[in-house]
Amino acid sequence: MSLMSTKADVLQTLSGIFPASAVLTEPEDLIPYSFDGTAVLQQMPLAVVFAQSAEEVSGLLRAANTQGFPIVTRGSGTGLSGGSVPVEGGVVLCLSKMNRILEVDRKNLTMTAEAGAVTQDIASAAEAAGLFYPPDPGSMKISTIGGNVAENSGGLRGLKYGVTRNYVMGLEIILPDGERIFTGNKCVKDVAGYSLRDLFIGSEGTLGVITQVLLALIPKPAARRTLLAIYDQMEDAANTVSAIIEAKIIPCTLEFLDRVTINCVEDFAGIGLPREAAAVLLMESDGHPAAVEEEAARMAEIARSSGAREVKIAASEAEAMQLATARRAAFSALARLAPTTILEDATVPRSELARMVAFIQGVAEKHQLRIGTFGHMGDGNLHPTFLTNEKNLEEMHRVEEAMKEIFDFAIELGGTITGEHGVGLAKKAFLKDAVGELNLEVMKRIKKAFDPRSILNPGKIF
Image (cartoon, rainbow, N blue to C red; front, side):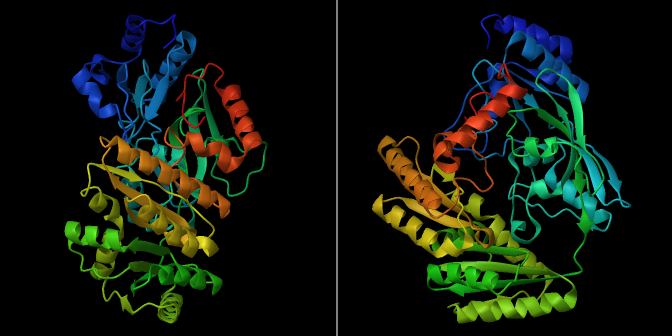
Protein backbone atom coordinates (compact mmCIF):
# COMPACT_ATOMS: atom_id res chain seq x y z
CA MET A 1 0.00 0.00 0.00
CA SER A 2 1.33 3.46 -0.89
CA LEU A 3 2.57 5.66 1.94
CA MET A 4 0.13 8.22 0.58
CA SER A 5 -2.83 5.86 1.12
CA THR A 6 -3.71 4.86 4.65
CA LYS A 7 -6.02 1.97 5.48
CA ALA A 8 -8.76 4.47 6.23
CA ASP A 9 -8.24 6.15 2.84
CA VAL A 10 -8.55 2.86 1.00
CA LEU A 11 -11.65 1.75 2.90
CA GLN A 12 -13.29 5.11 2.28
CA THR A 13 -12.51 4.76 -1.42
CA LEU A 14 -14.07 1.29 -1.50
CA SER A 15 -17.22 2.54 0.21
CA GLY A 16 -17.63 5.11 -2.54
CA ILE A 17 -17.51 2.47 -5.29
CA PHE A 18 -19.23 -0.60 -3.79
CA PRO A 19 -22.30 -1.09 -1.59
CA ALA A 20 -21.48 -2.05 2.00
CA SER A 21 -22.69 -5.60 1.39
CA ALA A 22 -20.03 -6.05 -1.29
CA VAL A 23 -17.05 -5.17 0.95
CA LEU A 24 -15.46 -7.48 3.53
CA THR A 25 -13.09 -6.08 6.13
CA GLU A 26 -13.47 -8.23 9.27
CA PRO A 27 -10.57 -10.67 9.84
CA GLU A 28 -12.81 -13.73 10.12
CA ASP A 29 -14.41 -12.84 6.78
CA LEU A 30 -11.05 -12.27 5.09
CA ILE A 31 -9.45 -15.60 6.05
CA PRO A 32 -11.03 -17.64 3.18
CA TYR A 33 -9.59 -15.12 0.72
CA SER A 34 -6.08 -15.14 2.21
CA PHE A 35 -4.96 -18.22 0.23
CA ASP A 36 -5.71 -20.17 -2.94
CA GLY A 37 -5.26 -23.82 -3.91
CA THR A 38 -1.49 -23.59 -3.40
CA ALA A 39 -0.05 -25.10 -0.25
CA VAL A 40 1.87 -23.03 2.35
CA LEU A 41 1.18 -19.61 0.77
CA GLN A 42 -1.06 -17.20 2.68
CA GLN A 43 -1.45 -13.45 3.24
CA MET A 44 -4.36 -11.54 4.76
CA PRO A 45 -5.72 -8.77 2.50
CA LEU A 46 -6.82 -5.34 3.67
CA ALA A 47 -10.29 -5.95 2.22
CA VAL A 48 -12.23 -8.07 -0.27
CA VAL A 49 -14.68 -6.52 -2.72
CA PHE A 50 -17.24 -8.27 -4.94
CA ALA A 51 -17.71 -6.49 -8.25
CA GLN A 52 -20.95 -6.94 -10.18
CA SER A 53 -20.13 -4.84 -13.24
CA ALA A 54 -17.26 -3.71 -15.41
CA GLU A 55 -18.02 -0.16 -14.29
CA GLU A 56 -17.28 -1.08 -10.67
CA VAL A 57 -14.03 -2.78 -11.69
CA SER A 58 -13.05 0.29 -13.70
CA GLY A 59 -13.77 2.60 -10.77
CA LEU A 60 -11.70 0.45 -8.41
CA LEU A 61 -8.68 0.28 -10.71
CA ARG A 62 -8.82 4.00 -11.42
CA ALA A 63 -8.75 4.71 -7.68
CA ALA A 64 -6.04 2.13 -7.00
CA ASN A 65 -3.84 3.57 -9.74
CA THR A 66 -4.30 7.08 -8.37
CA GLN A 67 -3.80 6.20 -4.71
CA GLY A 68 -1.22 3.45 -5.23
CA PHE A 69 -2.78 0.49 -3.44
CA PRO A 70 -2.44 -3.02 -4.93
CA ILE A 71 -5.24 -5.14 -6.41
CA VAL A 72 -5.26 -8.94 -6.66
CA THR A 73 -8.03 -10.35 -8.86
CA ARG A 74 -9.68 -13.61 -7.83
CA GLY A 75 -12.28 -16.03 -9.13
CA SER A 76 -12.86 -19.20 -7.13
CA GLY A 77 -9.31 -19.36 -5.73
CA THR A 78 -8.48 -22.75 -7.24
CA GLY A 79 -5.11 -21.66 -8.65
CA LEU A 80 -2.06 -23.80 -7.90
CA SER A 81 0.81 -21.31 -8.13
CA GLY A 82 -0.19 -18.65 -5.61
CA GLY A 83 -1.45 -16.30 -8.32
CA SER A 84 -4.45 -15.08 -6.33
CA VAL A 85 -2.76 -14.98 -2.92
CA PRO A 86 -3.30 -11.40 -1.61
CA VAL A 87 -0.61 -8.78 -1.30
CA GLU A 88 0.02 -7.18 2.07
CA GLY A 89 -2.10 -4.05 2.38
CA GLY A 90 -3.90 -4.89 -0.85
CA VAL A 91 -7.49 -5.37 -1.93
CA VAL A 92 -8.82 -8.64 -3.33
CA LEU A 93 -11.14 -8.05 -6.27
CA CYS A 94 -13.45 -11.07 -6.48
CA LEU A 95 -15.35 -11.52 -9.76
CA SER A 96 -17.41 -14.57 -8.75
CA LYS A 97 -20.67 -12.57 -8.82
CA MET A 98 -20.08 -11.53 -12.44
CA ASN A 99 -21.13 -15.00 -13.56
CA ARG A 100 -23.67 -14.59 -16.35
CA ILE A 101 -23.55 -16.41 -19.66
CA LEU A 102 -24.58 -13.57 -21.94
CA GLU A 103 -24.97 -15.28 -25.31
CA VAL A 104 -24.67 -18.59 -27.12
CA ASP A 105 -24.40 -17.78 -30.82
CA ARG A 106 -25.18 -20.95 -32.80
CA LYS A 107 -24.63 -19.20 -36.14
CA ASN A 108 -21.05 -18.25 -35.33
CA LEU A 109 -20.30 -21.07 -32.85
CA THR A 110 -19.40 -18.66 -30.06
CA MET A 111 -20.33 -17.96 -26.46
CA THR A 112 -20.01 -14.73 -24.50
CA ALA A 113 -19.75 -14.93 -20.71
CA GLU A 114 -18.72 -12.80 -17.77
CA ALA A 115 -15.40 -13.64 -16.16
CA GLY A 116 -16.97 -15.19 -13.04
CA ALA A 117 -18.96 -17.84 -14.94
CA VAL A 118 -17.98 -21.31 -13.73
CA THR A 119 -16.23 -23.45 -16.34
CA GLN A 120 -18.67 -26.34 -15.89
CA ASP A 121 -21.56 -23.96 -16.56
CA ILE A 122 -19.81 -22.85 -19.75
CA ALA A 123 -19.49 -26.47 -20.87
CA SER A 124 -23.10 -27.27 -19.93
CA ALA A 125 -24.47 -24.25 -21.80
CA ALA A 126 -22.52 -25.29 -24.89
CA GLU A 127 -23.79 -28.86 -24.62
CA ALA A 128 -27.39 -27.65 -24.26
CA ALA A 129 -26.94 -25.97 -27.64
CA GLY A 130 -25.54 -29.17 -29.18
CA LEU A 131 -22.02 -27.71 -29.10
CA PHE A 132 -18.78 -28.42 -27.28
CA TYR A 133 -16.35 -26.35 -25.18
CA PRO A 134 -13.30 -28.65 -24.89
CA PRO A 135 -11.00 -27.15 -22.18
CA ASP A 136 -11.58 -29.12 -18.97
CA PRO A 137 -9.24 -28.16 -16.12
CA GLY A 138 -9.41 -30.49 -13.14
CA SER A 139 -11.13 -27.75 -11.13
CA MET A 140 -13.77 -27.06 -13.81
CA LYS A 141 -16.70 -27.65 -11.44
CA ILE A 142 -15.70 -24.58 -9.43
CA SER A 143 -13.05 -22.63 -11.39
CA THR A 144 -14.13 -19.53 -13.33
CA ILE A 145 -13.61 -18.81 -17.00
CA GLY A 146 -11.79 -15.55 -16.23
CA GLY A 147 -9.32 -17.44 -14.06
CA ASN A 148 -8.93 -20.07 -16.79
CA VAL A 149 -8.02 -17.34 -19.28
CA ALA A 150 -5.68 -15.54 -16.87
CA GLU A 151 -3.80 -18.80 -16.23
CA ASN A 152 -4.29 -20.28 -19.72
CA SER A 153 -5.63 -23.43 -18.09
CA GLY A 154 -5.27 -26.85 -19.68
CA GLY A 155 -7.07 -30.07 -18.85
CA LEU A 156 -7.52 -33.71 -19.72
CA ARG A 157 -8.51 -33.01 -23.32
CA GLY A 158 -5.57 -30.71 -24.05
CA LEU A 159 -3.72 -33.25 -26.20
CA LYS A 160 -6.31 -33.21 -28.99
CA TYR A 161 -8.16 -29.97 -28.45
CA GLY A 162 -5.58 -27.60 -26.99
CA VAL A 163 -5.87 -25.30 -23.99
CA THR A 164 -7.92 -22.25 -23.06
CA ARG A 165 -5.94 -19.97 -25.40
CA ASN A 166 -7.17 -21.94 -28.40
CA TYR A 167 -10.81 -21.01 -27.67
CA VAL A 168 -10.56 -17.32 -26.73
CA MET A 169 -11.75 -15.07 -29.55
CA GLY A 170 -12.16 -11.85 -27.59
CA LEU A 171 -11.75 -10.27 -24.18
CA GLU A 172 -13.17 -7.28 -22.35
CA ILE A 173 -10.37 -5.96 -20.15
CA ILE A 174 -10.10 -3.19 -17.59
CA LEU A 175 -6.62 -1.69 -17.76
CA PRO A 176 -4.74 -0.60 -14.62
CA ASP A 177 -5.77 3.06 -15.14
CA GLY A 178 -9.46 2.08 -15.30
CA GLU A 179 -9.86 2.23 -19.08
CA ARG A 180 -12.01 -0.49 -20.62
CA ILE A 181 -11.05 -2.14 -23.91
CA PHE A 182 -12.40 -5.04 -25.95
CA THR A 183 -9.88 -6.93 -28.03
CA GLY A 184 -10.92 -9.56 -30.57
CA ASN A 185 -14.21 -10.39 -32.31
CA LYS A 186 -16.27 -13.25 -33.79
CA CYS A 187 -14.20 -13.39 -36.96
CA VAL A 188 -12.30 -16.61 -37.54
CA LYS A 189 -9.54 -14.59 -39.23
CA ASP A 190 -8.27 -11.24 -37.97
CA VAL A 191 -4.69 -10.01 -38.26
CA ALA A 192 -5.30 -6.29 -37.79
CA GLY A 193 -2.48 -5.09 -35.58
CA TYR A 194 -0.91 -6.74 -32.54
CA SER A 195 -2.88 -9.60 -30.98
CA LEU A 196 -3.51 -7.90 -27.63
CA ARG A 197 -5.95 -10.67 -26.73
CA ASP A 198 -3.12 -13.20 -26.70
CA LEU A 199 -0.99 -10.97 -24.51
CA PHE A 200 -3.57 -11.05 -21.73
CA ILE A 201 -4.16 -14.82 -21.91
CA GLY A 202 -1.89 -16.38 -19.31
CA SER A 203 -0.84 -12.99 -17.89
CA GLU A 204 -1.97 -14.08 -14.41
CA GLY A 205 -3.80 -10.86 -13.61
CA THR A 206 -0.67 -8.71 -13.89
CA LEU A 207 -1.61 -6.62 -16.96
CA GLY A 208 -5.36 -6.04 -16.67
CA VAL A 209 -8.59 -7.42 -15.24
CA ILE A 210 -10.60 -9.67 -17.57
CA THR A 211 -14.32 -8.99 -17.13
CA GLN A 212 -15.84 -10.68 -20.19
CA VAL A 213 -14.79 -13.52 -22.50
CA LEU A 214 -15.81 -14.39 -26.06
CA LEU A 215 -15.24 -18.12 -26.61
CA ALA A 216 -15.15 -20.34 -29.67
CA LEU A 217 -17.24 -23.51 -29.59
CA ILE A 218 -17.09 -26.57 -31.84
CA PRO A 219 -19.57 -29.27 -32.87
CA LYS A 220 -20.04 -31.96 -30.25
CA PRO A 221 -18.23 -35.24 -31.14
CA ALA A 222 -20.67 -37.92 -32.27
CA ALA A 223 -18.99 -40.83 -30.48
CA ARG A 224 -16.51 -41.57 -27.71
CA ARG A 225 -14.59 -44.67 -26.59
CA THR A 226 -12.70 -45.01 -23.29
CA LEU A 227 -9.93 -47.50 -22.52
CA LEU A 228 -7.86 -48.34 -19.45
CA ALA A 229 -4.42 -49.94 -19.88
CA ILE A 230 -2.74 -51.56 -16.86
CA TYR A 231 1.05 -51.82 -16.44
CA ASP A 232 3.54 -53.56 -14.17
CA GLN A 233 6.28 -51.12 -15.21
CA MET A 234 5.76 -47.36 -15.18
CA GLU A 235 8.19 -46.88 -18.06
CA ASP A 236 6.00 -49.12 -20.24
CA ALA A 237 3.12 -46.68 -19.77
CA ALA A 238 5.34 -43.77 -20.81
CA ASN A 239 6.59 -45.73 -23.82
CA THR A 240 2.99 -46.48 -24.83
CA VAL A 241 2.26 -42.77 -24.99
CA SER A 242 5.27 -42.14 -27.21
CA ALA A 243 4.28 -45.06 -29.45
CA ILE A 244 0.70 -43.81 -29.83
CA ILE A 245 1.88 -40.35 -30.86
CA GLU A 246 4.52 -41.83 -33.17
CA ALA A 247 1.71 -43.82 -34.82
CA LYS A 248 0.11 -40.47 -35.68
CA ILE A 249 -2.84 -41.03 -33.34
CA ILE A 250 -4.03 -38.01 -31.36
CA PRO A 251 -6.57 -39.27 -28.84
CA CYS A 252 -8.87 -36.97 -26.92
CA THR A 253 -7.39 -38.04 -23.59
CA LEU A 254 -4.18 -39.83 -22.62
CA GLU A 255 -3.88 -39.70 -18.82
CA PHE A 256 -1.58 -41.42 -16.37
CA LEU A 257 -1.70 -42.53 -12.71
CA ASP A 258 1.15 -44.14 -10.78
CA ARG A 259 0.78 -46.77 -8.01
CA VAL A 260 0.66 -44.25 -5.16
CA THR A 261 -2.12 -42.34 -6.90
CA ILE A 262 -4.01 -45.50 -7.91
CA ASN A 263 -4.25 -46.65 -4.31
CA CYS A 264 -5.24 -43.21 -3.08
CA VAL A 265 -8.02 -43.02 -5.66
CA GLU A 266 -9.26 -46.46 -4.64
CA ASP A 267 -9.32 -45.48 -0.98
CA PHE A 268 -11.12 -42.29 -1.87
CA ALA A 269 -13.60 -43.34 -4.57
CA GLY A 270 -13.55 -47.14 -4.92
CA ILE A 271 -13.49 -47.04 -8.72
CA GLY A 272 -12.11 -50.57 -9.11
CA LEU A 273 -8.57 -49.77 -10.23
CA PRO A 274 -5.93 -52.53 -9.81
CA ARG A 275 -4.04 -51.63 -6.61
CA GLU A 276 -1.01 -53.75 -7.46
CA ALA A 277 -0.39 -52.07 -10.84
CA ALA A 278 2.64 -49.83 -11.25
CA ALA A 279 0.67 -47.50 -13.52
CA VAL A 280 -2.50 -47.14 -15.53
CA LEU A 281 -3.22 -45.16 -18.69
CA LEU A 282 -6.67 -43.70 -19.32
CA MET A 283 -7.18 -43.35 -23.08
CA GLU A 284 -10.12 -41.81 -24.85
CA SER A 285 -10.97 -41.38 -28.52
CA ASP A 286 -13.80 -39.21 -29.84
CA GLY A 287 -15.16 -38.14 -33.21
CA HIS A 288 -16.92 -40.01 -36.05
CA PRO A 289 -18.13 -43.44 -34.81
CA ALA A 290 -16.17 -45.46 -37.38
CA ALA A 291 -12.96 -43.50 -36.79
CA VAL A 292 -13.37 -43.82 -33.02
CA GLU A 293 -13.67 -47.61 -33.17
CA GLU A 294 -10.62 -47.89 -35.41
CA GLU A 295 -8.55 -45.54 -33.26
CA ALA A 296 -9.53 -47.28 -30.01
CA ALA A 297 -8.61 -50.68 -31.42
CA ARG A 298 -5.24 -49.38 -32.62
CA MET A 299 -4.47 -47.81 -29.21
CA ALA A 300 -5.33 -51.05 -27.44
CA GLU A 301 -3.00 -52.94 -29.78
CA ILE A 302 -0.16 -50.45 -29.18
CA ALA A 303 -0.66 -50.60 -25.41
CA ARG A 304 -0.42 -54.39 -25.38
CA SER A 305 2.66 -54.44 -27.60
CA SER A 306 4.27 -51.79 -25.34
CA GLY A 307 3.91 -53.91 -22.20
CA ALA A 308 0.39 -53.44 -20.91
CA ARG A 309 -0.68 -56.58 -19.08
CA GLU A 310 -4.36 -55.80 -19.67
CA VAL A 311 -6.46 -53.32 -21.65
CA LYS A 312 -10.07 -52.73 -20.63
CA ILE A 313 -12.57 -51.02 -22.93
CA ALA A 314 -15.49 -49.28 -21.23
CA ALA A 315 -18.70 -51.10 -22.16
CA SER A 316 -21.02 -48.17 -21.43
CA GLU A 317 -21.09 -44.39 -20.97
CA ALA A 318 -21.48 -44.94 -17.22
CA GLU A 319 -18.33 -47.05 -17.09
CA ALA A 320 -16.47 -44.49 -19.18
CA MET A 321 -17.52 -41.74 -16.80
CA GLN A 322 -16.35 -43.84 -13.86
CA LEU A 323 -12.90 -44.24 -15.40
CA ALA A 324 -12.67 -40.50 -16.09
CA THR A 325 -13.70 -39.85 -12.48
CA ALA A 326 -10.73 -41.92 -11.34
CA ARG A 327 -8.37 -39.44 -13.01
CA ARG A 328 -10.28 -36.35 -11.91
CA ALA A 329 -10.26 -37.56 -8.31
CA ALA A 330 -6.47 -37.95 -8.22
CA PHE A 331 -5.59 -34.68 -6.49
CA SER A 332 -8.43 -34.89 -3.97
CA ALA A 333 -7.47 -38.47 -3.17
CA LEU A 334 -3.79 -37.66 -2.63
CA ALA A 335 -4.64 -34.62 -0.50
CA ARG A 336 -6.14 -36.90 2.16
CA LEU A 337 -2.83 -38.60 2.92
CA ALA A 338 -0.76 -35.80 4.41
CA PRO A 339 -1.30 -32.39 6.07
CA THR A 340 0.29 -30.62 3.10
CA THR A 341 -0.14 -31.54 -0.55
CA ILE A 342 1.99 -29.72 -3.12
CA LEU A 343 0.85 -30.34 -6.70
CA GLU A 344 3.46 -29.49 -9.35
CA ASP A 345 3.37 -29.62 -13.14
CA ALA A 346 6.72 -30.14 -14.77
CA THR A 347 6.32 -30.63 -18.53
CA VAL A 348 8.63 -32.27 -21.06
CA PRO A 349 8.54 -33.23 -24.75
CA ARG A 350 6.56 -36.46 -25.09
CA SER A 351 9.63 -38.32 -26.32
CA GLU A 352 11.24 -37.71 -22.90
CA LEU A 353 8.35 -38.96 -20.75
CA ALA A 354 9.93 -42.24 -19.72
CA ARG A 355 13.12 -40.49 -18.57
CA MET A 356 11.15 -37.85 -16.67
CA VAL A 357 8.93 -40.36 -14.88
CA ALA A 358 11.94 -42.47 -13.88
CA PHE A 359 13.75 -39.35 -12.67
CA ILE A 360 10.84 -38.32 -10.43
CA GLN A 361 10.84 -41.80 -8.89
CA GLY A 362 14.57 -41.52 -8.27
CA VAL A 363 14.22 -38.08 -6.69
CA ALA A 364 11.55 -39.39 -4.31
CA GLU A 365 13.85 -42.22 -3.21
CA LYS A 366 16.90 -39.98 -2.94
CA HIS A 367 15.18 -37.43 -0.69
CA GLN A 368 13.01 -39.99 1.15
CA LEU A 369 9.78 -38.31 0.09
CA ARG A 370 6.31 -39.52 -0.85
CA ILE A 371 5.54 -38.35 -4.36
CA GLY A 372 2.44 -39.46 -6.26
CA THR A 373 2.67 -38.81 -9.98
CA PHE A 374 -0.22 -38.43 -12.38
CA GLY A 375 -1.03 -36.13 -15.25
CA HIS A 376 -1.65 -35.41 -18.87
CA MET A 377 0.90 -37.79 -20.27
CA GLY A 378 -0.31 -37.27 -23.82
CA ASP A 379 1.02 -33.71 -23.83
CA GLY A 380 4.00 -34.35 -21.56
CA ASN A 381 2.46 -32.53 -18.59
CA LEU A 382 3.21 -34.50 -15.41
CA HIS A 383 1.95 -33.67 -11.91
CA PRO A 384 4.44 -34.90 -9.31
CA THR A 385 2.52 -34.41 -6.06
CA PHE A 386 4.43 -34.08 -2.80
CA LEU A 387 2.71 -35.52 0.28
CA THR A 388 4.34 -33.72 3.17
CA ASN A 389 3.87 -31.56 6.27
CA GLU A 390 4.70 -27.88 6.11
CA LYS A 391 5.39 -27.87 9.89
CA ASN A 392 8.25 -30.32 9.40
CA LEU A 393 10.89 -27.81 8.33
CA GLU A 394 13.56 -30.44 7.67
CA GLU A 395 11.23 -32.37 5.37
CA MET A 396 10.13 -29.17 3.62
CA HIS A 397 13.77 -28.42 2.89
CA ARG A 398 14.03 -31.83 1.19
CA VAL A 399 10.85 -31.05 -0.76
CA GLU A 400 12.37 -27.80 -2.01
CA GLU A 401 15.56 -29.56 -3.05
CA ALA A 402 13.57 -32.26 -4.86
CA MET A 403 11.42 -29.68 -6.68
CA LYS A 404 14.48 -27.82 -7.91
CA GLU A 405 16.01 -31.04 -9.20
CA ILE A 406 12.78 -31.96 -11.01
CA PHE A 407 12.47 -28.53 -12.62
CA ASP A 408 16.15 -28.46 -13.59
CA PHE A 409 15.87 -31.88 -15.23
CA ALA A 410 12.67 -30.90 -17.06
CA ILE A 411 14.48 -27.87 -18.51
CA GLU A 412 17.48 -30.04 -19.40
CA LEU A 413 15.13 -32.31 -21.38
CA GLY A 414 13.78 -29.33 -23.31
CA GLY A 415 10.75 -28.93 -21.06
CA THR A 416 9.34 -26.22 -18.82
CA ILE A 417 8.60 -25.50 -15.17
CA THR A 418 4.85 -25.24 -15.68
CA GLY A 419 2.50 -26.58 -18.32
CA GLU A 420 -0.74 -25.16 -16.96
CA HIS A 421 -0.57 -23.93 -13.35
CA GLY A 422 1.29 -20.70 -14.06
CA VAL A 423 4.22 -19.01 -12.30
CA GLY A 424 2.55 -16.85 -9.64
CA LEU A 425 4.46 -16.83 -6.37
CA ALA A 426 5.35 -20.50 -6.30
CA LYS A 427 7.64 -20.68 -9.35
CA LYS A 428 8.98 -17.20 -9.97
CA ALA A 429 12.40 -18.20 -8.62
CA PHE A 430 12.68 -20.76 -11.44
CA LEU A 431 11.44 -18.57 -14.30
CA LYS A 432 14.78 -17.17 -15.45
CA ASP A 433 16.24 -20.65 -15.88
CA ALA A 434 13.15 -21.71 -17.83
CA VAL A 435 12.89 -18.82 -20.31
CA GLY A 436 16.27 -17.07 -20.22
CA GLU A 437 17.32 -13.68 -18.92
CA LEU A 438 16.41 -11.67 -22.02
CA ASN A 439 12.91 -13.17 -22.29
CA LEU A 440 12.37 -12.38 -18.63
CA GLU A 441 13.52 -8.79 -19.18
CA VAL A 442 11.10 -8.36 -22.11
CA MET A 443 8.25 -9.62 -19.93
CA LYS A 444 9.14 -7.05 -17.28
CA ARG A 445 9.10 -4.28 -19.92
CA ILE A 446 5.60 -5.34 -21.00
CA LYS A 447 4.44 -5.31 -17.38
CA LYS A 448 5.86 -1.82 -16.89
CA ALA A 449 4.25 -0.53 -20.09
CA PHE A 450 0.77 -1.66 -19.05
CA ASP A 451 1.06 -1.17 -15.30
CA PRO A 452 3.77 1.41 -14.50
CA ARG A 453 2.65 1.77 -10.88
CA SER A 454 2.54 -2.04 -10.45
CA ILE A 455 -0.87 -2.10 -8.80
CA LEU A 456 -2.06 -5.36 -10.42
CA ASN A 457 -0.88 -8.54 -8.70
CA PRO A 458 2.53 -7.11 -7.76
CA GLY A 459 5.20 -9.65 -6.86
CA LYS A 460 3.71 -12.39 -9.04
CA ILE A 461 5.67 -13.99 -11.92
CA PHE A 462 8.71 -11.70 -11.39
